[in-house]
Length: 119
Image (cartoon, rainbow, N blue to C red; front, side):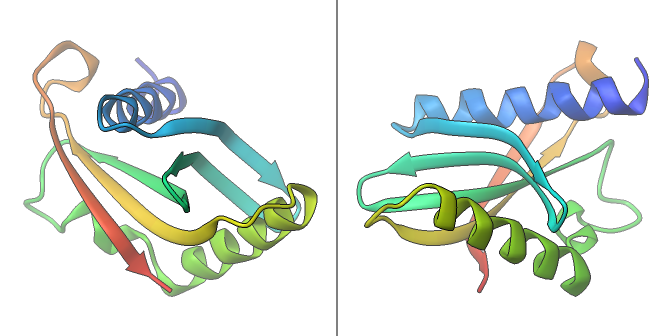
């Protein structure tokens, strides 16, 4: 499976995980000139803008470490645009979901949801 398809598979895994925990998926792969948001989900009074990071393992670095300050800025900018286009009273939050899939889409995965990963 090529990297782009594997990335989409990881985002679907993250969305399924969120649904199982009571989140409603509001959008996926929101893209604009400012950046991209992998998953936008609501639970209670919160809207979570979720960055999904898929890695085979954490030997080199944890997946969350690839959400650099520059990436965070692009996510915040895209979230601001989404909020401007979708008027809401929901409190925004930025999460990261790490997915470790040693066997790719064929094997078992380990998922770690980091709420409020950055401001």
